Length: 249
Image: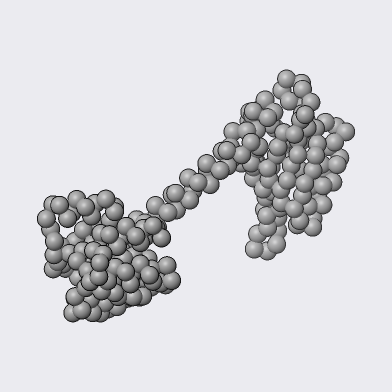
């Protein structure tokens, strides 16, 4: 999909020239405004990938003030294009954390490279932030989050709760078959666990179950587990994803 660019420039000739250049580069110019007020009003509906912002604008807001308002609405990379190169203006612009401040006149190829780099860097940052959030959520869950590969009996644990809950390190839990805790599950509960998991895998439906284990200290603990089988492109079950909670009272 062509990258979506919003142009905010008060001089009509420059605004139209920049728009035509961007289109020649293959970008989709979703809007070109001469005032910050118009840009702020339409920014969410237009949903651009990047904003090219002049400092001097028509209306009551300048480019820096406009960017501040835009950033209150959406997270988006900004490139300033301006004839102003004085240190005071540049320092004010820095507070909005633009990707770059480019002085007019600028080279079209340099602008294209800067746009591509800005969008790519912003996308990578959002991905890293999202992954960090997911990691924080998983680490904050007071239960064992796992992925269990049935074909090779291997377990992937996503937080450090399994050892805390069982007393055993993952490397000590050997001979996985249908469940990676099977050697710890009390013999009275093993058949029920086996039946529930087999039914879930055969019918490819989510499961939930209670069972008891004996931890490393010999204590009996009651666990509650929920999960689901995950299938491949041919409908085959690849692994089980689940969470186990210690509900011992």
